[in-house]
Each structure stands twice: as structure tokens, then as C-alpha cells.
Length: 308
Image 1 (cartoon, rainbow, N blue to C red):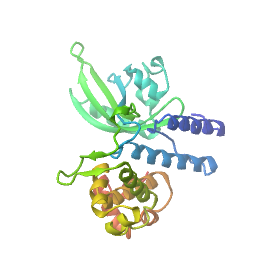
Image 2 (cartoon, rainbow, N blue to C red; image 1 turned 90 degrees about the vertical axis):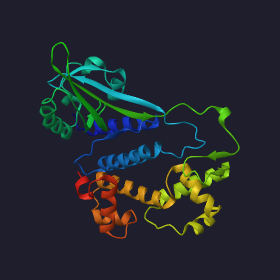
Image 3 (cartoon, one colour; image 1 turned 135 degrees about the horizontal axis):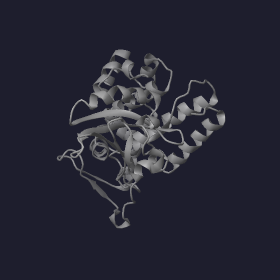
Image 4 (cartoon, one colour; image 1 turned 45 degrees about the horizontal axis):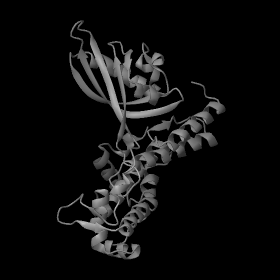
């Protein structure tokens, strides 16, 4: 793949176009160079990941669009790992035509780390007549953009030839259709959450909950005041903040703070050179021990194993 500055800038331009369309599932391959373009790639990947993670959330009350539409990447492979069939949506995601893919080995559209992973996994997949597993793969589009997803891989046998076939598929969320105007109301009863506490939220209340949400995200390194004091600062009461926030976002205020701290920490681990101790401090954790324990509880691995 070309590595000239012109190609690097074109990749950035392509990523920005996809982000403008609401497609936050692409990313750029990190570079070994240590210049302004490489720094921009890191920052764009971080911003894109933040947008992607926040786009699909439970707090879209009174939003203009719903994340309902799924784009599916689906490939049918032969026992040698060559592509036999491909869906139109797959071609759209990978920015190519069906003829560009059919007959080619899967490795042609995988990043180098994923090529290694796939080459190690393929012989094991073919040992059984039927097998299902999930494998995280990194696809490379014709524009140089990366698509990283957990893929469902199903191995089965052709009934006529007894030849093994491999079905590889995954889904991507995208922007859905706008809410119908007739569904708008002056007040909204949010029913998601605990049955005993249903809070009637006015448009002003909804905006307050969103302000609290944004305030937390923008101040992850700082501890929150008591819920009563926070509610007073934001212009509401403790009861409405406690249950209104949980019903809009499906999580309590303080658990949301921890969740976002860990999510930002994971982004920094993957896309920055900061030490784990620095990342823990930047995301508001008092000690590296507390940070490591909370991180492993959420992601199943300690921070040291997540770093590439």
C-alpha cells in the first residue's frame, strides 16, 4: 500500500467524508512516522471512536434520528479462504465492486495483523464438519480505511460436494430514519428503567439530563459532587436527576461516569503512547490498582493486554 504524504492525506479526507455521512465505523491505520499527519491520524481515530461509541446509546429521547438501520458485511468463502460470494452492502463498505473481491483470498482485504490471525485460525476451523466461532478482524477498504469488527464465522459442508464452506458476516449500525413529526409531544414519559420510578420529563428536563451527560463526558478527570449538589447546580432536583438520567441512559449517573472513564481509557490505550499510570490519572482514577481492576471487570482483560 502506498505510504506517500499524498496518499496519507487522501485517507484522512476519505475518513472525514465517511464521518460527515454518519459512518463512524471506519478508522485509519496507525503509522510508524512521528509527524503532524501521524498525530492527526491518532486524533481522528480517537474522535471517531468517541462518536461511534456515543452514537448508539439509550438516551436518544426526542432525537431527530434513530440508529435502526444495519449494514451487513457478508462473505462466502471456499475451503482455501477465497471469496466465492459477496453482498452488495459488503462491496459498499469495502468501497469496491463484486468482481474486485470474488476469487480473491480473504487476506487481500485484511490488515497484516488480521492476516496472521486468519492464517492461524483457518486450519482449525476446517477440522470439523460444522463449527461456529467469533473472530475479531480488521478489514481494509480500497480507500485505505479500516473496518474492525467481531465477525461471526460459520463452517459448514456443501451437501452435494462435501466441500467445506465458510460464511463470514457482521453488522454495522448506521443512521436510521427521522422520527415522525406527529410523535413529538410537549412532555415525555420515559418508561425505560425501574418500574417503581417513572419520571415525567419536560423538554427542559430532557435538556438538563443531556447537559449532565455532556458535562460528565467533558470532565472525566474530575470527581462529581453529591447527587443532591449536582442536581442543584444543574437546575433540577435529586429525585428527577437520579431516576430521569437512569431512564434516559439506562444507567445511574455515577456508573455512567465510571463507564465513560473506562471507555476513554481504552481509547487512549489503543491510540496513544501515554503510560497506563498516566492514562489512569487522566481519566480520573485515584490509583493504577483501582483502574486495572475496574478495567478488567468491564473488558475482561487487564489494560496491559489491551495495548497493541
